[in-house]
Amino acid sequence: MRRVITYGTFDLLHYGHINLLQRAKQLGDYLIVALSTDEFNLDQKQKKCYFTYEQRKELLEAIRYVDLVIPEINWDQKVSDMHEYHVDVFVMGDDWKGKFDYLADEGVEVVYLPRTPEISTSQIKHDLHK
Image (cartoon, rainbow, N blue to C red; front, side):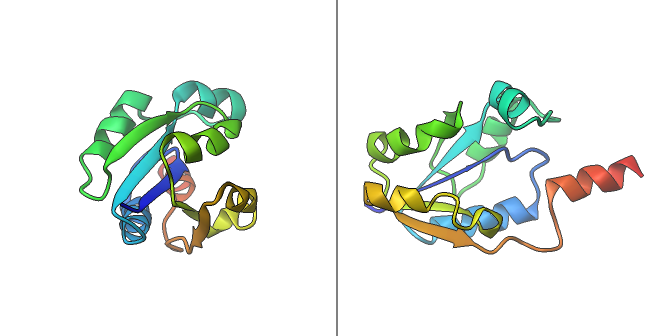
């Protein structure tokens, strides 16, 4: 079984997120989503989420491409996650290109997928505040 993992906040879930999850799932048999906790988002990413961690987790678990949702509690857990979950492929949007190449040293294929250009949570929040 080929295991794929991706990380993110997934707040205000939209079709760009679904597109990323679908393409990530196509790279393997089992997709793990490491979902940023509320504390991690606030303390380390300086992001306040609209939906709570539990609400975002429930939304992700309802998506057919997602097999498992785990908490992302800090930036440094990625190496241990690769081993604990026996990950074969690490996937992120291409706006992170090069940032996680070090995971290849853990025996993981690192893939940066093109983002859906016309949509982002930041853009939705910006448009709603107009």
